[in-house]
Structure formats: structure tokens, C-alpha cells
Amino acid sequence: MKLTSWLYRLARLSRDAEVIASGNPKKMARRVKNKVLGRSIVRRMFRW
Image (cartoon, rainbow, N blue to C red; front, side, top):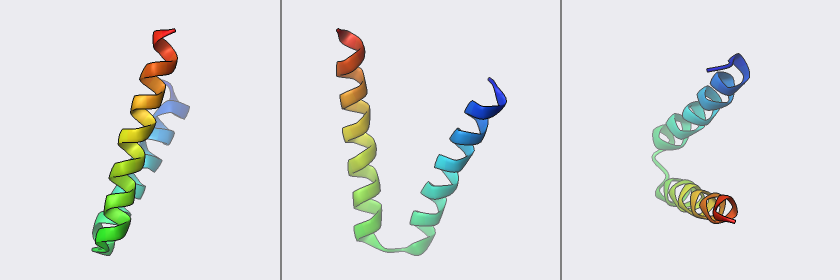
């Protein structure tokens, strides 16, 4: 894995940990919703 990809992945994990540590259920729900939505959109884009 390239350095840049690794750093972006680390940043996403860091944000996930920050949201979970906040204990705010609204932030957690929004984070999960956006991840699921983003993944489904990307899958559809690559099917074309």
C-alpha cells in the first residue's frame, strides 16, 4: 500500500475513533449512514 493511501486510511480510522469516543449517538449514526451511502454510490459507479 502506498504511503498516501495508508495516511488517508489512518485519517478515516482516526475520525471513526473520535466519533465513537464522543459518545454522541447522533454523530455515530450519521457516520455509519454516510459510510453505507458512500459505499453504495461507489459500487454503482464502478458497475458501469
